[in-house]
Amino acid sequence: MPELPEVETLCRQLQNKIAGKKIFSSAVYDAKLAHLQDMGGNTVVAVRRQGKTIEMLLNTGNSILIHLRMTGRLLWQKETDRPKHTRWQMTLPAGNLYLVDPRRFATVRIAPTKDAPESNDIILDFDEQAFMANHGRRKTKVKNLIMDQNAVSGIGNIYACEILHAAGVHPEKKAAALTKKDWAKIFRNAKNILARAIEKRGTSISDWRDLNGLKGENQFELKAYGQEGKKCIKCGATISRIKQGGRSTFYCPNCQR
Image 1 (cartoon, rainbow, N blue to C red):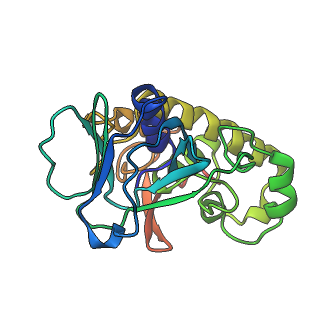
Image 2 (tube, rainbow, N blue to C red):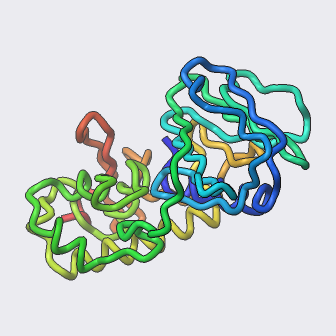
């Protein structure tokens, strides 16, 4: 599933491509999206991210909200040849935007535009004090907590592993047991790792491609995720893998305490 850097990459590319442009038409090719009306005649004012959701702000006061889920992709083409597994299409002056989604889990909906940004977005106006007050004393495991979209928006499995490895925090440690210094390291490394991943246009391990169909480059920067059996770059110990909530967690048992 695309995480914050991948969704942010798409939003920035879409902002450059379609902001200020009039939608000629839209078309639905999947009964699951039959509720969507033709968006022709509307203008895309701006594109921004809400957690893992892409928001296209329209001149009508509504927004198109797209969540890609597991295998959803947005693909820009000048050509009108519809890609395989296309579920929805939007036509603009310079080309076509396709929602390509083999497993059909992605969602598209129209909703009134909200003015207030989220305060739990780690790379925007993240409210660390509010986070600590609301979540700092929870007994849940720290990896589960930073992946909780109500606590911190946008972080998924890949970046949670990378953030905790960089911060030297064991993924199974209870949130309530962490010190202020621990949390400061988590927040600092989260911002740095996510910012670097955005610069690399995301992490392409399986399905992820950017708006132009190109792979990201952050997979070459991974220090923990997918590194089972390899040496930790920080201490030389062996990276291990455990299961947490049905997901694989990669960590260094020596330097993550």
